[in-house]
Amino acid sequence: MPDRRTKILRVIARLNMGGPALHVAYLTAGLRERGYDTTLVAGTLARGEDSMAFVAEGLGVEVVSIPELGREISPLRDLFATIRLAGLIRRERPQILHTHTAKAGTVGRVAALLAGRARPPIVVHTFHGHVLRGYFGPVRSRFFRFLERWLARHTTALVAVSPQVRDDLVALGVAAPEKFTVVRLGIELDERVGADANGREETRRYLGIPPDRFAVGWVGRMTPVKRTENVLDGFKRLRARGIDATLCLVGDGPDRAGLERRAHELGIVKDTLFLGYQEDVGPLYAAFDALVLPSGNEGTPVSVIEALAAETPVVATRVGGVPDVVRDGEDGFLVEPGDSEVFAERLAELARDPALRERFGAAGRARVVPRYAVERLVDDIDRLYRALLSAGDTRTRHT
Image (cartoon, rainbow, N blue to C red; front, side, top):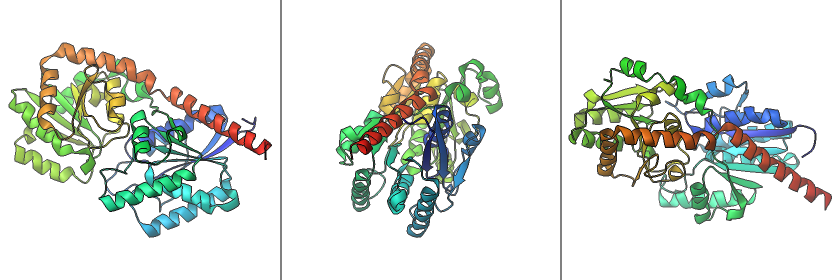
């Protein structure tokens, strides 16, 4: 790689609650010391979404806003976002354009084509999961698969956050395996969920959870793909097994009102806490005895990584990148989507066996802290960038 600093334009649809926002913030800050100057571009949050821009701000990462860029599909707004981003590419002249998440991947890579002679010589896209199966009907799904295949042909390298996500995309015909690199998320886990000062007793006292009661946690955005209603159903079945338990739901979203009604209908509302969005999640993970994740689709779930880092075992569905994080029978349990009965049974097993919870928790923390370290993330991306820049220099010298 040349001695001069390398200019990166990094684009994400929005800095909402979740792994991608943390990923781009930590990555952008970490690459500063490696010779990269990054402009981070983000769009607007959807109504009801909670922002994680504070993480980027705390790391001294400035965010350039394109208001028209967002999660929802809107032909006119998407067109304006693409034009504005193409103009930014022409002004910035980055050597690398790196997009994250589906919407930013589409807008960013089309903008690179529109930039003409200013098009970055290297274009990288990271799949933090995908929406090519299970999100839309068959017609729209086929269209988006066609679109991703076309965009892949105009992309230098594709990154997947887990081997499962890569294999799924290869099976869907997005690109050949050799075009993908697997780069797992990087998170400052000790900063977010440090086990040395977790505040378990104080948090439980604040939440009104007795010391000997089994506490089940869920963390995320309340949307259909998260299947949060399965948490309620599984929790009711857990209580029916005679387990004295409290359910803590951390997060918000469009499904919240319906979930509150459902908790009333199931007769579990007195034992269910709707805690809303929380910036400081460490004490909450410490207060849980287990975390549940019943999602129908996932890339790499940050809540699961953070729970394991806090020595909290996990019961999660065997979907997407979840098996890359949770080892069934070693630091948690994996179940099939929609099987509330097995969810409840696995939770009951953990509730009845404190030694099993302790063993799972210790094994989970020992594995995830180094595996999802920010330094490892920065090393992986730095290595990828250098290889791509070197290959570009080689092609230039031979033309």
